[in-house]
Image (cartoon, rainbow, N blue to C red; front, side, top):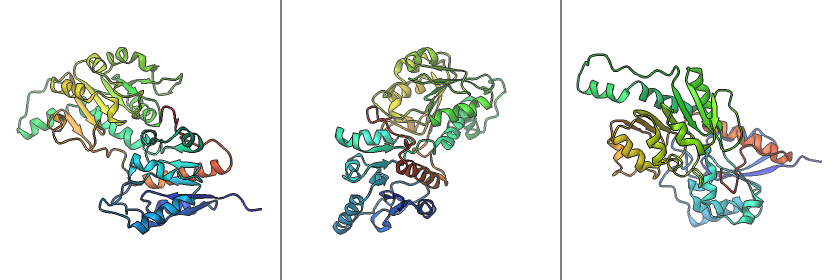
Amino acid sequence: MSEPRLKLAIATPLPADAEAVLRAEPRIELLHEPSLIPAQRFPSDHYGEADFKRTPEQEAAFDALLAGADAVYGIPDEDPAQVARVCTPSVRWVATTAAGGGSLIGAGGLDDATLERIAFTSSAGVHARPLAEFALLGVLAGFQRVPELKAQQAAREWPDRGDFPRGLTGARILVLGLGHIGREVSRLLSALGAHVTGTSRHATSDPHAHAVVHPDRLEEAAANADALIVTLPGTALTRHLVSRAVIAALPSGATVVNVGRGTVIDEAALTEALEARHVGFAALDVFETEPLPSKSRLWELPNVLVSPHAATMNRDEDRLIAELLVTNARRLLDGEPLKNRIDTHEFY
């Protein structure tokens, strides 16, 4: 008797090295027709060529491919309106490309029956290291006064020494969220001597955090933080968790880094705090509206680093996601719990 196989449809750009990882698993039957999917423009690109458009015949062929699948990788164009399209009657599992894929599924407007029938997973963990490195960059840029150094360099000034930079040893860092990203941030910072406090809604521990507090105590924790790092996804529970009150509670000159989702921070309040220099520096990879509107004052503030939601990008991302897909395919076929299962109540 032959082993059960999983028909996995590809609905997002897939490079050759990632495809090879999937085809190496004998129990996966890959449903992949490159002509029906936009070509990748660069590694870790999950949108593909912007001018790609299927003909009516290709649209029908794409729907037929999805209709024959047991599982689907990716949401076309990362578009919430396309979520229902991949949830065909035969599909049991949908894997999203992002660590915060729950927000995309939550915005898809699926009915309760579909949410109950299909297992949804994220790619959490794959992006932890590059995002943690960006967070470290942001903290160091703020602590080492990089904006002032750049301004002095541009003005060809050689000022008297006296305004000492802030070191990481003993620095108090507040990390919002202790998922894969938050734990890697905690590990890197603690290794460099920082005193890390993490936040979690659940009873949890982190070997690299000195303390873990509930988000209900966020204002209190912020008052003792030299830097605040956001790693949380965008959900109804996390929207504006970093509120005007939390930002006001930060010590003057604190650094803020966001590698989670832009909606977690009250962006208007943060902008005002940056203009007033209450927040000394912010390194932001995500924003409430993306792309960041050209009229946003964040573009012109000298104490802000704007990153175009690109801190996750690395050349190994597609291969690592493919390896995660293989792991979960095996788990599904063997009746084991899937890794990174998305909570379809909180979409986290």
